[in-house]
Length: 221
Image (cartoon, rainbow, N blue to C red; front, side, top):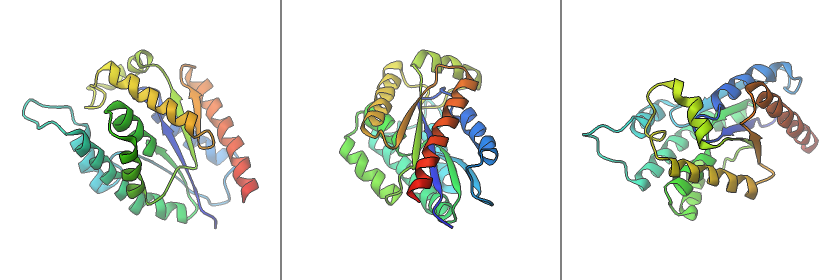
């Protein structure tokens, strides 16, 4: 059995990643793309492992008046710790077993949020990501692109915003610019999906991208 595939969905909060990941999970078994018996595993960052659940609470719980603010570099390293555990106990073992992994956020989020959003050095982030992932990159990243106002309107129904969602508009605009820069720099890995369309149109666009990419993977063996 060959190595599996890591497909990541990225974007600012409110673009519909979770919905599209669930739809992709439901569609893949009917697509004719999978090998007989090939498994599909859905996951997310931060918080997919037991250690990650604790780190997620530290990272995303909304600030309280008595809570010590998280320094930007500490935030970067907490996300890296979550990712290192995720890669070691979940992602790499499952890929070695040939599974298709659908992941809500991965390394591009760190570049966009901590690099462009927080303004941390991009070379430093590349080094930290390399350590955390042990060299594991996505086979395909689907960037759901939507402007801040529409993304925020879509996320209003989800209840209390987390610590990252509470950041000001300028921060989220910089994050979006980060995703755009990653898309432009990595055209073979990152595909932009127009997330301003209706949900069904986004789903169709994603399915076509996955079909096209699967053909390339099959040709490459």
